[in-house]
Amino acid sequence: MEGRSLRTGKHASNLHEVRLDPWPLLGNKRGEQTLLVEPEHQAELRAFVEYARRSAKAFWALLVASLVLCLGGTLLSLAWAPAIWAVPAGLLLLTWMLVAYAFATPETIRAMGIRRSVILARVGAGVMFALAVATVLIALRAD
Image 1: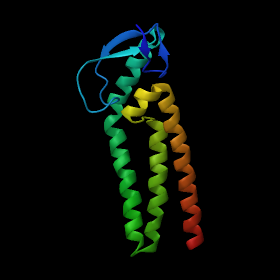
Image 2 (image 1 turned 135 degrees about the vertical axis):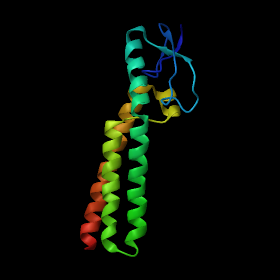
Image 3 (image 1 turned 90 degrees about the horizontal axis):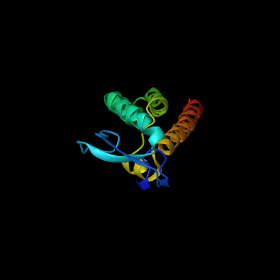
């Protein structure tokens, strides 16, 4: 079958149809869908979808925790200056989460494929790490 591979994001003519429930990898819509992938990568696709399913709760918990640290640290630092240290802690947690659970948005996965979206998420983690280091340096300078 011809189409765009979900794994690589490239158009190919030798793709196989794989029927599975890609939640939460491809959004909140549950139910079996037909996904296109190269024959040699069918098992890899199934394994990645299962990994995303198993990791969804941890991913969201870490995301919320990092956002609470960043936002809470920012707001609390207005009244208590040492609270600013929660911001780099939140950014470091977010960085670790993006490396451990390199999931991109469903739109990115559909446009770029799983392989490239994982790379993009890890590059994003590198940018977040640079931001965390910058905030630590700014906080040290403010002390």
